[in-house]
Amino acid sequence: MRNTLLLGIALMLWSCGRQEPVQPNIVFIMTDDHGYQAISAYGSEINSTPNLDRIGDEGIIFRNSFVCNSICAPSRAALLTGKHSHANGHLDNRHRFDSSQVTFPKLLQQAGYETAVIGKWHLKSDPTGFDYWNILPGQGSYYNPDFIEMGRTYRVPGYATTIITDMAIDWLEKRDPDKPFCLLVHHKAPHRNWLPDTIDFDLFDGTKFPVPENYFDNYEGREAASLQEMSVIKDMRMAFDLKIFGTDGDSATQSEKDFMWYLNHRLSPEQLRAWKREYDSIGRAFFANRPEGDSLAIYKLNRYLTDYLRTIQSVDRNTGRLMDYLESSGLLHNTLVVYTSDQGFYLGEHGWFDKRFMYEESFRTPLMMHLPDFYKAHGDISQLVQNIDFAPTFLDMAGVKIPSDIQGVSLLPLLEGKKPVKWRNALYYHYYEYPAEHAVRRHYGVRTDRYKLIHFYNDIDKWELYDLQADVHEMHNLIDDPAYDKVEKKLRKKLDDLRKLYKVPEDLN
Ligand code: SGN
Ligand code: CA
Image (cartoon, rainbow, N blue to C red; front, side, top):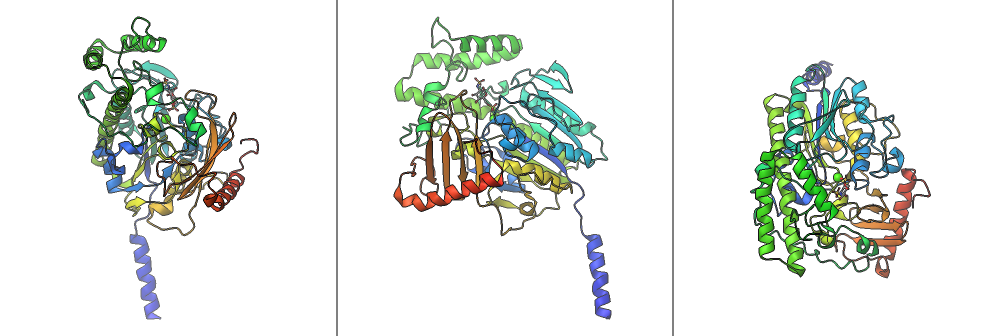
């Protein structure tokens, strides 16, 4: 009896002393087109990102994080709603987001959170569910960008990544200190056409980056891949993308003229001077030794990666600034900091830039989290996670009931360091933007931890099957290989099951 009493008192004391998770703050940092291959925490061989790595080093790093539709606006709609594209209605970049839908910021707001979004938005309709919003119109500008602050448009001098970070810190300073908060920081970088901050112009100068082993891919057995228009060699524009003016002589292309107009009208005289100093000298070196054939192909890759990685250095530096602010202001211990991208990107793999395909480089997206003290997970997380999981995770963490029609799952058990026995064993993917720029055919598919089955449809009808263990670069389509008949059958069944689970309309195939 006495022992039971003592145990009761001890339990009571333990539960009183136990640190309960007060509604944690959320800082969600999302870049535009940041491939995991350009983050050192993911083993990058081409750059170093110490400030981004810090998030993963001190917290967790997801090794198998994916999107449901590898394109900007649909990715953002999936983030807000926790639903696949067919369910939230945002199939491609041309849609306008139905902002009357239930979104996680709206539910957090109702639960007492102060909410804000700053930076790229791209959903056409105005943000809803935010106490404060200040967004780039459309794709936004790298230099001296316009912003729409709660309906008012104005221009801000400086560089987009730095300005967005300044605005984020400013909002944190001015927010209601008595409320938990959720702040979405959405960078423009490193989106095409990769314009670096002028202070980063000396980075990667003359670097010869390793050439991906499938850079000269011939797309054998992969018809949709052969039909794309996102090839570094064929489709990158010399002036607009690579900043080499004058390759067309007197007949400068419209794109070259438009880009020149943008530079002359948007940049300050000082920015323009720095810009010309940098790219005139690159142009002179190009014409002095004009490369052709394979040398031109390699030259283009180096030129592309140089500017792409320069824009990422600014993201890294500014993320460090934001982390330092959270730490010095005492917020970090009770804040979930997420670093991710709206999708991955090709850095020359298969000969490409851009995204859209369900192949690994663009289907995957980086995901690292710095956790509030209460959550004990640390290091690598290998479960399959997807961008539809953000909404339920944030709601779960805030103690808000997750609406039953949300299709993602809460990642909280993983953040708590648990090893759930029943985790999802396959992911559903669906890309819809065709006919469109880059000519990537519509496709949907399923990926397990080892295999991937894809169906390209619309003006094409092709299936592809990959064994990711044997063929990490997805060069060998096994769909006609009898040795994989059983695997294919299982995957088709899995795909049907997922399409039923997510209620994908029959005609979307
Ligand atoms: C622009 C780019 C494309 C890019 C899309 C979508 N062309 O149209 O290369 O795929 O955006 O990007 S550009 O000539 O205007 O740079 S997304 O991130 O918004 O989905
Ligand atoms: Ca994007």
